[in-house]
Image (cartoon, rainbow, N blue to C red):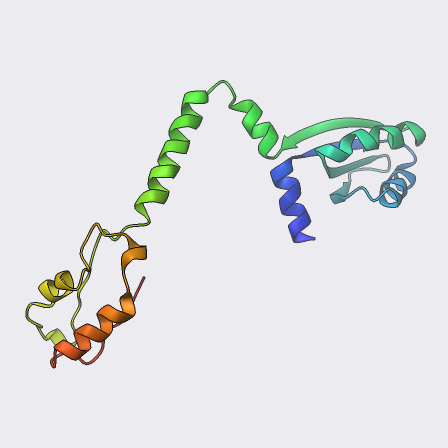
Length: 167
């Protein structure tokens, strides 16, 4: 059910008001035709508010006519309506896409190496040893074999007992 709601949010949904004397029959017909509705709230004896997907809204018109109910759209939500609202702002969308691409590409690289010591001990030249093994800022993450680097540091240095891999 949660996945169905997420899909409806992505595809778009409308919040509608159904007004008429046969609201229960309206809901039963929607259920029989397997029309997914959620967030039903009855305002008064003749008014009902509910959410429905935009692809199922056309099916409801026939049911409303059969039950002599009136339908009014109260809210439009979801990606299609959001995209329609911003369709004149194409430069905004292009820059947003460029920023997302840059963020995705930059997340594939190592930008910072943090070396911390326990009990304020100082280990000499650990940074240069890491650079010799190929771990330096600006290198792609997929080109690094962390297990090999950890094992080489442990074998080459007697003053290091433990290294934690945190990425």
